[in-house]
Image 1 (cartoon, helix red, strand yellow):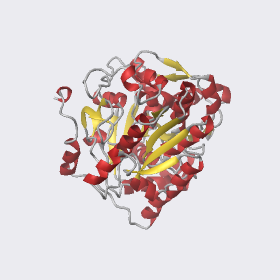
Image 2 (spheres, one colour):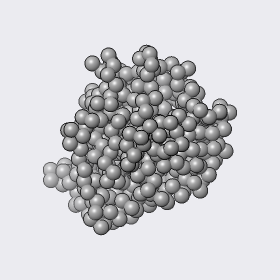
Image 3 (cartoon, rainbow, N blue to C red):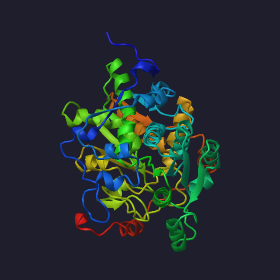
Image 4 (cartoon, rainbow, N blue to C red):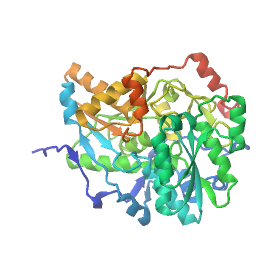
Amino acid sequence: MSKKIPTRLYLTEDEIPKFWYNLRADMKDKPEPILHPGTLQNATAADLEGVFCKEPVKQELDDTTRLVPIPDGLQEFYKAYRPAPLIRAYFLERALGTPAEIYYKFEGTNTSGSHKLNSAGAQAYYAKEEGLTSLTTETGAGQWGTAMAMACAFYGLKLTVYMVKVSSQQKPYRKALIETYGANLVPSPSLTTDSGKKILAANPDTGGSLGCAISEAIETAVKTDKCRYVLGSVLNHVLLHQSIIGQETKAALEKYDIKPDIIIGCAGGGSNLGGLISPFMGEKLAGKSKTRFIAVEPASCPSFTRGRYAYDFGDTAMTTPLLRMYTLGNGFIPSANHAGGLRYHGMNSVLSKLYKDGYLEARSEVQTDVFDAAVSFMKTEGILPAPESSHAIKVAIDEAMECKRSGEKKVILFGLTGTGYFDMTAYMAYNDKTMSDHVPTDEELERGFASIPDIPQNK
């Protein structure tokens, strides 16, 4: 007899994973290696340790260790807000009249309001263990900056956050929360760094981009004693830390003999999507599953669906190592009216490789449709979703309605990365009908593609 499925499928504190899962270890065809921007040779640990903390660098370059132990000190930090709930969306199912079962993994139960704290805690922990005294980072919509501010306050580290200028203007309360935790917040691009001055000289009215903010954060880190730069998405060690999401989800589903047919995640740089799908994708790579995986990105920043698979820089000033990824070009800057987050020009190399090899689907959605889905979800499930998460909600609803049309019952799982309580400016624009949809033209994309480096590996 099957178990009755409750609304909330909780794990106990003792069931919080003790290891992160490294999907690359189970990939027969690995993602291409990181390249040193000067030599175009495979980047070494020594190359990266001048910018990043040592242990994350080790994790970044490790393609073979399948399970990575979570340090005891970090496990204690996780217990403050984990395990996160897995929720059956009974009310949404009822409103849609669908035979589908819909589940969402909710990562918004901590003060930062998002999944970002999983890697922020890890990177702050490793920085403290290394003897560092301060960190720098960038943030777009603000979730990562908030999470990093929380983690640095917990571990006693100073933090400087370069926040995309247009986001800092749209989200003053997110800025206030970051500063309340003791971090120094600088709207980017700024006049505090050489890279910021250069960007502003070329485009004085720019609203900024994550690429701009990364350039400033890295410059400050390398010029500051006992300081390193930390990143909240894109890199492989971030996906490793976020695999705790997928492992918890998989364990909770297995308690009730539930196997997902479709797993959906929003996609900006890839941290949430990669963390959610990792253990399920491992089964698919082993031939043990036929689950479909769908990445959902904004139509205004469509790196998967309209980007190029190439080696590119992670920042606008072209100072980072080169990553082989789906990219719109390091010089691409999203439209200023883009309010839905997911603003990064490129995508994690693991996810890019999986997409290229056909294991992962991708869709792009315009933001008014995304906010339509967000409001429908809020009215039925009682949670105001982050705009980023709402991209996944949009496609989950689409798939559920397809089940309604076909009469086929499927199990749909999506990641609810966090809450939207600091995104009310965007919701106000939606309510006032001043929100507009921008889909870049081919000509606009070509300007971004022109910034992709002309190197032999891209021929």
